[in-house]
Length: 131
Image 1 (cartoon, rainbow, N blue to C red):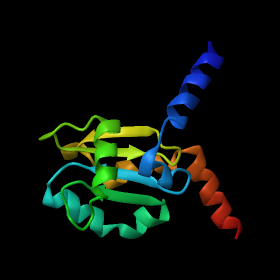
Image 2 (cartoon, rainbow, N blue to C red):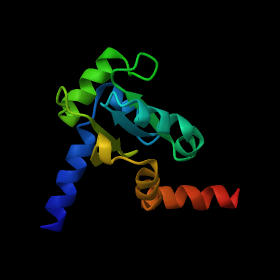
Image 3 (cartoon, rainbow, N blue to C red):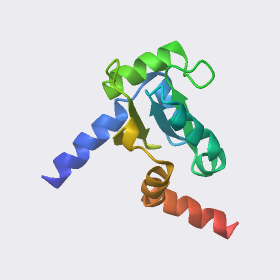
């Protein structure tokens, strides 16, 4: 049964394609579908924390932070994004969706806590300390 679960999860990861695959194993992706100004301001406030954790932010309706049209379509399909629903999604470096928040419940501290608890992030922090 464990083997089946592992194979299924590998299949999901392997099925990631298109432009999204360009970020795989390089960056975590934060997708924001909210037009909330306060959420956007908070994301800008701690760009250093986001960069430190290899997080690339895409805000779908912001010309400066939006992905390409093809990547936006890919993200909308992959994440099943619904029009008019304000949400924030975190995709791991492996391309899998890790978390989904309602925009009003999202905080950077919750994001950083989640990322910092991941085994890959712990390894990254250990590697940086050793340099």
